[in-house]
Image (cartoon, rainbow, N blue to C red):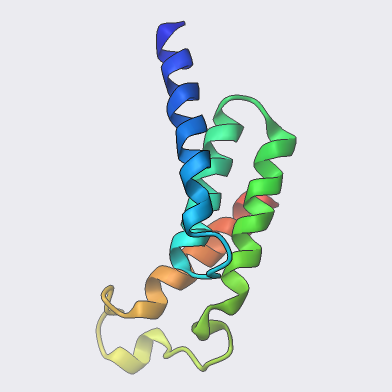
Length: 101
């Protein structure tokens, strides 16, 4: 029971610090909301988790790759480059969408 109380304490502290990245509509904000949703889902709070996943997906709406043409796999010749900025955004967006559903 001690580990659960400690986890709740850390989660509460993280929520208090989350306001620093709110409103920026970027990758960090989306990831913060997503991980909050993961914690809430793990602690069996599905409605609160869904709300966080929804907020995470809303944070992804400003990502550039959503409005640009993303190169196809065959355009690279071998593999997609994992260091491209849109890769992290795309992964975060699809993870948030899947989790919300």
